[in-house]
Amino acid sequence: MDELLLPFQFAFMRDAFLITMMLAVPAALLSCFLVLKGWSLMGDAISHAVLPGVVIAYVIGIPLVIGAFVAGMACALLTGWIDENSRVKRDTVMGVVFSAMFGLGIVLYTKVESDVHLDHILFGNMLGVGPADLWLTGIIALGVTALLLVFWRDLLLHAFDEQQARALGLNVRWLHFGLLAVISLTVVAALKAVGIILAIAFLVGPGAVAFLMTRRFGQMLFAAVSVAVFSSFAGIYLSFFIDSAPAPTIVLILSAIFVLTFLKVSWAARTA
Image 1 (cartoon, rainbow, N blue to C red):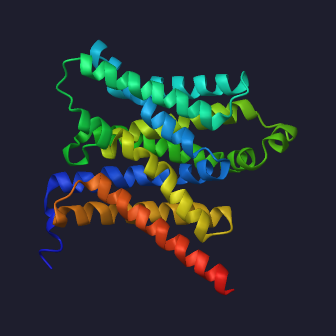
Image 2: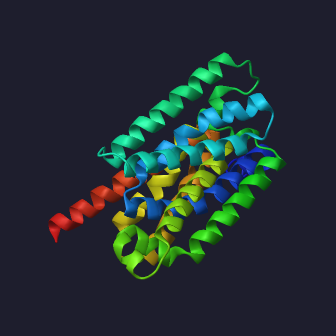
Image 3: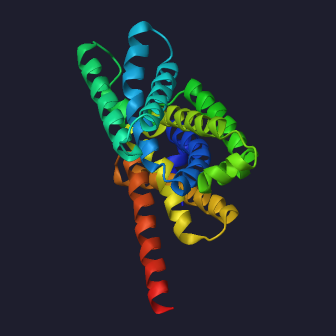
């Protein structure tokens, strides 16, 4: 029993559990809207686009999260502007923009002498979080969760039928850019925990699993949060004993849950 509880005896492990659990809830809720709206690539685009913002923020000496948020919003706004003013499809626009932003970030990083290791930005450093990181992630997580729970009906209608939402008098433009802002904030919160590269798994995986498991949106939200929290806990716990990086282990568990759920649903549909 003592060996099973060994991870909880270390402060850095307890902090890793805490910061990832705080991130899991808003990311899981947001993933439901992204999956329903078909915005999975938007989460990927913003996750990659924050890198140049992080580097520039480091150079001019401001908090990295400010640079990340500004870069994420710039990517989202640029994607929306090109989408509205060209015949190119949205997924193509997102692919071009996030590739360019990520490439710019890598070029800037190689030209700057920094004591911030690139791996910590790309893949997170949840075992090295401090009180400031916990507070920042907690505040962002609480704010994003509150916004999603307050406006979930409007966002749901916006995801399913934008024209109907406009006809009912909803400010579709505010909902659109509000959702983009929330995605950017969640990515910022994910920087320290899971990093830029793996943030997309948190922003899509739980919602994808919940979409396969449920038929009602309320159930989907609950299932997504449950899957995210379980994957986070199991991934960090398992990584301690197999001596692996926590963030990739979480993603592998989340991916395994998706595959098993998909196989189960497919088998049930075949035998029905």
